[in-house]
Image (cartoon, rainbow, N blue to C red; front, side, top):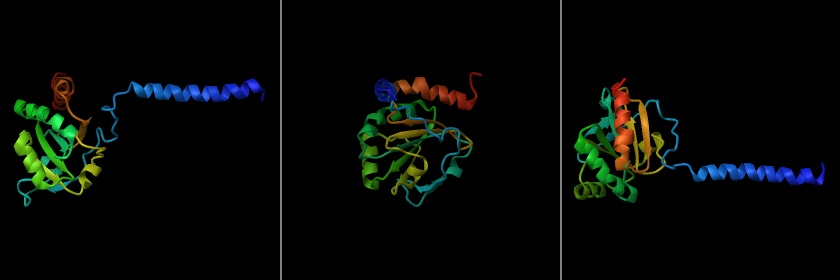
Length: 180
C-alpha cells in the first residue's frame, strides 16, 4: 500500500463520519421513530389518581380513540405542554388519559389543581413500569391509540399548538377514516 493510499483511507472514513454527524444536526429530536407505531399498545391495569381503588385497563379503552399523555409534576417540559393539552381537551376532539409517571399522588393532584385538568382519567404509574412498557424515553410523551388498541402516532416531547392542526387533527381524521 502506497503512502498516498494510507492517507486517503483515514480521510475517507473521517468524511463519512462527518457526513453522519452533519445530518444529525439537522434532524428534529422530536421525531424519534418508534417501533411501536401500528403495534398493539402495552397492557396495563392501573389505579386512578383521584380514586386509588378504581383501576382502568387497556380493555376498558377498547372501541375508543384516545391519547395517552405521560407526564409528571416534576417535569418542566410537561408544564410547558399543559396549556396545549387543556386546549385540546376544550376542543373535545379526543379523550386524553393522563399517566402520572413516577410521581407522588399529592404532587400530581396539586399540579392539576393549579394548571387545570385536561384528562378524562388520570392513571398512576408510580413504579414507571407501564411507561417502560410503552417505550417512554422521558416525559412528556403522548401516544394516539385507535379503537383496536393500536398505537397510531407518538409525540416525543411536548405537544405544541401547531401540532394540533398539523399532526393531531390529521391523524385523528386518518384513524376515523374521514376525508378518504
